[in-house]
Amino acid sequence: INISPWSFYSTEILCLTLFKINDLIIITLSNHQRNIINIFNTMVEVDISENEAALYDRQIRLWGVEAQKRMRDAKVLICGLRGTTIELCKNLILAGISVTIQDSDTVKPEDLGTQFFLREEDIGKNKVEASQARMQELNPLVEVSILVKPLADLDGAIISKFDYVCACATKSVGSLIKLNNVCRENSALFFCTDSFGLYGYLFLDLGNEYKYIETTIETPKPGEEGEEEKKIQKEQILRFSTLEEAINTKWKSLSTKKRKRVPETFFTLRTLYEVEKANKISNGNETKIEMDAVLEKLLKNEQMEPAQLFQTENVLESAETARLGAEINPVCAVMGGVVGQEVLKAISRKDKPITNFFFFDGVQSRGTVRNLPTK
Image (cartoon, rainbow, N blue to C red; front, side, top):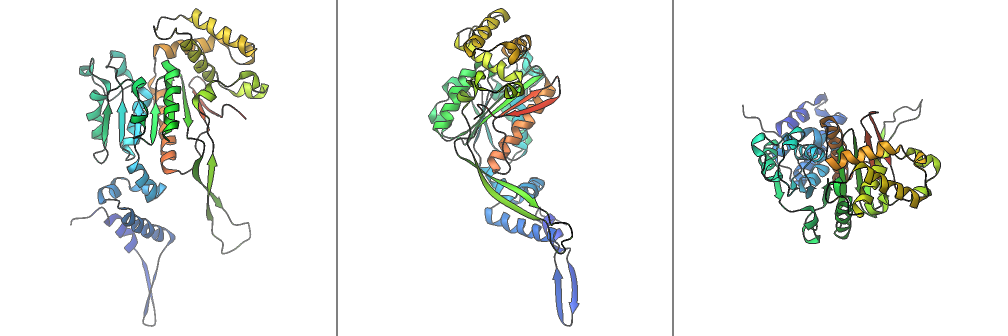
């Protein structure tokens, strides 16, 4: 028997309860069956294909047909192929999202440790060209495109073609700030992420007026009969800061309590940015002593003592690890999962996004969300 993908839904709909009163046949539907019928009708209305219905069945039941259509139609640019963004690509492609991957670098031996789309024979080839075909094999229903350009060349003409941009380039925080500003000018939602050693971070800038649907469940009070749980949906609006605003947070403006709650990874990013502005990051030869001098000057300008914010040695070691580009697979997997979740939230507009930093500490196996600059 040939069974259409639609028959999976049809089978559940046809398992009905029938009973007869006089000559009238009564058909009863469970709430689950009503939901199946609603899903079926909506899929027809929004033109979801049979193949999509079969492949994304669980997602459709979880997020709804409209959210799946938004994922199918999303235009996503992923800049810089590193361990974290490779995990992100995998997660988005499997969810049914077409992606464009950008990188102008060639494959190096160390890339094989975290980038599972690459093989030894790819060394010396361009990263995105070597990865494209294997990414495409994950899901034939999406399109994996490539962009072989340096990050610095991504101007408004290019960014305007995309709705969502996720970049990975911690060695150049200045480039991330520039890209974030271009995204703002072209109404593209911006994400940047990376991992270095046992640490990782994610930053989101979803604009000045990001709207999403918040769903809450209202349960009946004890003793009330005949009442069912009610699902209440309400539109919420959030305002996000740019990366430039967040990274330049005045440390002295934070209360003592808030200072203690900001992970050291944030200060690592700020240190890398200050070193870059001092024109010492470009040659890749700066030492921990040079970075220490930059950090000391920064603290002096902020009129702060290291003990009030972080352990200096920890920040310098993290900065050096980031400069070397060192990655660890499990950390990349964690960060890729978190970033993928936030991109899916932004596309579907369901649930509250992270505002606006997520920091992962692999030493303590802990993730922390912080909103900077604090108001």
